[in-house]
Image (cartoon, rainbow, N blue to C red; front, side, top):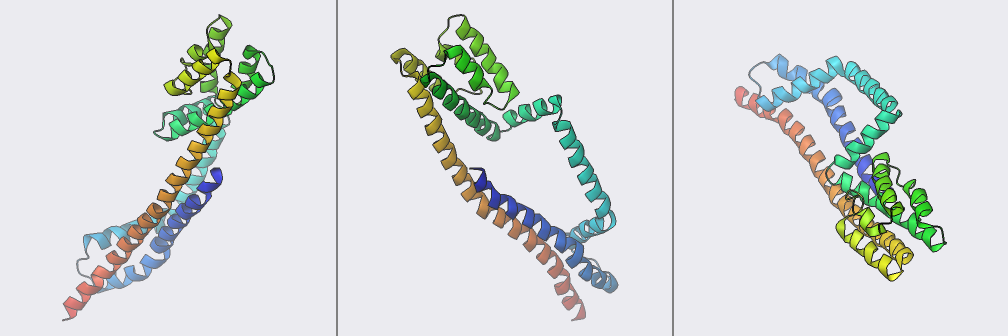
Length: 240
């Protein structure tokens, strides 16, 4: 599933690279001509030239600042508080948080179903499956469910206290499976179905993102080209 994101990521990086190339190497060649000619330039052209000049004058500083910021961010994310902040922000992001929660639920259900099928006691299986979440915030929510199961509550009712991880429909299916003695089979089925659904959604999103990135790139490049062509028509009119 992560492999489907490689092409859009490469395309986005290439788009940024093309824009920087145009602003740093292409625009300055016209800038001297327009300045020597004089006259009022169109607002679009002036804006593009100002951005190009900004990159030429402060590009190394901006690049250094970006590198330092990335390194500091990575260092912060390596700490316990940094990891927790990243996990919380991931869960709060629209769409991304939902997808991250569903992936975690898939791992949890598959691990729990496999352990229950192997005859591992439910409490022990829950503790092991909790480690598969890969998110401390979600793991803490599951801790509450484990405590409720230890006090005699049903699994489905206990998992309802973790809405970030288990939507109401999943809780209902787990509750029914627990009552019918098919908990292990239902958990594995839920994991498989959810994973397949997420894979379809992700591939559909990537299929939309690819032409969208191309369109955005074409708009930016087209804007720069138009901004550089407009003064040429102005020069022709002045000569006439």
